[in-house]
Length: 268
Image (cartoon, rainbow, N blue to C red; front, side):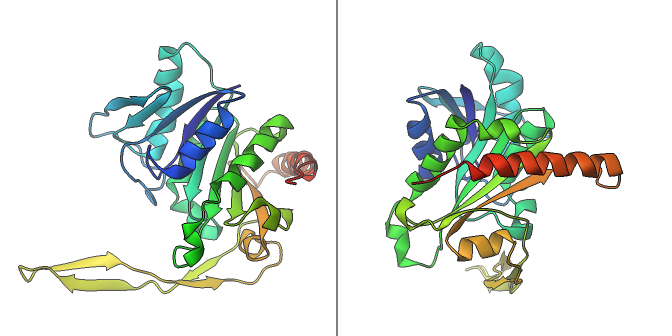
């Protein structure tokens, strides 16, 4: 397969490089990612400034824009330049979770969504690292990479509905510690919503958005609960008109096919 890898953590981020090296043994893999970290930038496109494309290494490119820019540039420009057609766009492996309403802020999810807009199978994958845990000295990106390899080997990505995104969150632990895989819906996460006010050395005020995570709303079917239970969370984000009965029926059929494909996955 020809695979485009994008992210929001930047072209040098360990997650995307881990996935790149894991997949390139079996596939043609191209990285096109931001030259700097662009986390929580949502679905931003650069329309008011020129974009700079930099060849960082063999099959690795950096872009001066945002995650959605990277996907658009990859599909509209890079695949023509390289004379290939991408079969799938994978965004990640993200450093940190993309659960609940956080997906609306996520540059990782936005990069996958941009691919879905253009009819390509799209996966957003995140490793749910706890940034305050000492466990971060370990490197568990391999767990998420192995899951992606199995998804591709079993053709699970072919069951992603048109204009849909497979949003995957993987617990930050070893493969052997994963309790299983759960097909989930979006949960809701709670934050303190603090705004930190400080002064610089000139006495000028400045602010940090410094909300602290306060837990999630209880729901046994949510992506948040799955990660709490050390389960891989697999959810589908779909762009469609849910007010139409035909669309609802088709959505149910799409979900059924995808669930059946997910059930074939065995991590160990």
